[in-house]
Image 1: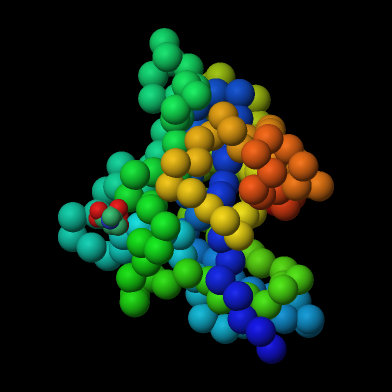
Image 2 (image 1 turned 90 degrees about the vertical axis):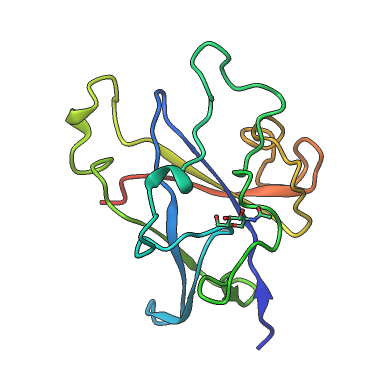
Length: 168
Ligand SMILES: *[C@@H]1O[C@H](CO)[C@@H](O)[C@H](O)[C@H]1NC(C)=O
């Protein structure tokens, strides 16, 4: 079975500011059971690290409500450069066609949406994939530009799927 490094770019976009990140990735086998070793996003910092705080993992865009999303806003946080994994938090290994779970830590986006009155719902997660990532990739050149056929924008990747953040 050929193992391949999975590369994902995530755009989590709601009408208003929101934040969350993929804590862990897992592969499903054909029975729908999660198998193998977990994978992580680049630049992952352990929640067990005494210096851990949410800001180390958050990449909030737009950076200010005045600026809005700018053409130079990178889709990945500066610490999420290509290959920035550790032995403790390696990338996910998966086989072609594998089904993959992206796991979030619930922090109220789904169960307590009323705490953020301007939020209408918990939003949509857009999952983009590429086998030729660039550290310079911007949100504006990918989100709602790359499409399912791989023909959008610079054509270096595609929209794998979009899903409700609240999966029930
Ligand atoms: C890699 O990620 C770690 C953890 O987020 C961060 O401290 C470090 O600066 C990153 N390195 C680079 C080159 O981005």
